Image (cartoon, rainbow, N blue to C red; front, side, top):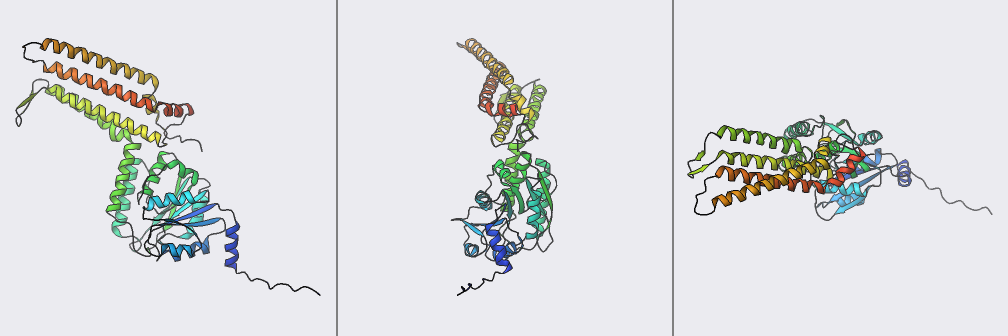
Length: 409
């Protein structure tokens, strides 16, 4: 007796595509940072499921939502990672990238403002670039006027302060290689994450591209505050300016202050400076003292900021390598030591001359010798501080990696 065949299972095209996606190796992960996006998330997940080919995974990072975001994600075609509390968009993105299975990672806001159709094009560009952004084409309906003005102002600020080319550096749809992400060392916790990515990508010498995309009206309540988050973004720009542009933020102002101080001291050297409110009489050397010490301190802050940038992964500039080279450090240490010894000798001489019942009148020499001694101590301390980083700087010099030449891929 012939056996009876079991009834044939009927598989719909959508189910077949879903099974193929489950068995296909993951090459790209779409990360959706989501905070109270229960209204928009179902439509976004459906669009992703319908349009993405096999080889893509969708990962929702629920950032401590108080609505049904997690429930929607649990029943949707995606993988869910949850934060117990709201920790910020930046933290959610970092969590998503750390949990991603693909070598390529696409970041997309979960508010239905970005076109899913652009994702494959983003990933295709990652064959030749490290970071690819979608440049939003917005309208008055999709983006309020204050947001458009803010985006324009920040993009101009990025260009002036950090040399970033014109583009949409605050876009919420972009893709990057996971190995490139590890090189960025991101720290931002909120909406300033895109700012940090763009500036650090430039500093690390990553290959960046962008292309225009449609920007649609969001679904659900907006989370970004133009003022508080705008100030957070501005703060991130300024902090990274101090780290990655120390010549502009510290060293050049220090040199300018030094020039003005010495020039002012020369101009005032014909007599004393009188301050009528306190009845004090100060020699013009004091003006030079304050300016010289303050300007030198600014220069040291600039070098410290540049060294911190190196510790964070930014290749050092050739000027920084020359300035911190061992012969230069030894020479500066010698100068600092001589200044300290000369100052101490002069102070001993002034003390001996002052001994007894004499009235001390040599204020010029006292101020000058004290200034020289403090300056020598600052130079010696700066050399010791720079020497702490000498090993890492030497490695960069030996490998030939300087600003504009990123570490090997």
